[in-house]
Length: 230
View 1: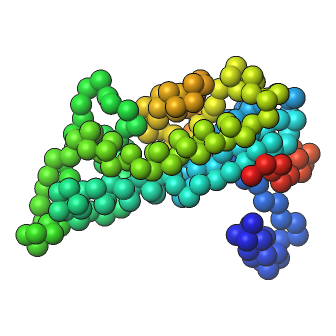
View 2: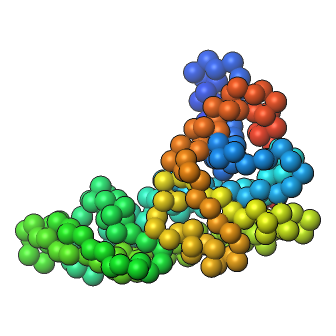
């Protein structure tokens, strides 16, 4: 709430005539083409860089919305800490992100993967190269992924009963760059018992949603409503 007001104030100081603030998950849902105006429930989980935003929408309104400060950046930091403690090697954020993209996964892979990683040795005080496996990266990501899955399960527990059947039929759409982590959709499916689909435009769904709202004033005004549950 405080952050939102700060953004609005900054925009007005920059001489914006009117300011709208929209939850990322709502923009992602619209960008993913979910029928948010129908009298049925739709659920989206937007896994960005800094936050994971969860929303359940119906009749162009927000039924439930929540965010946790765990997402792509948290995964990178977890990899950095794991390699530091396990291999006594210091790596940077760009290296951690590369490892995540190349061999990261939320569940075991059918074919094991590995990657060479270079960094500064804590014990030797000189550059060193090691090989990291997908199993190690999965272990590193356990904590952040547990936070995300708990938040999704909690959201489902807060959904009104009359919309629960809709989610059973429609499932969950996941968007954002972190949604592309291997087998994350499968893990969420196992954790929730619901179908989980990665949006085909996962990287751009929020931007697409904002664009559609700017073209439709009615959609924009309805999408800025406060959550009924949080």
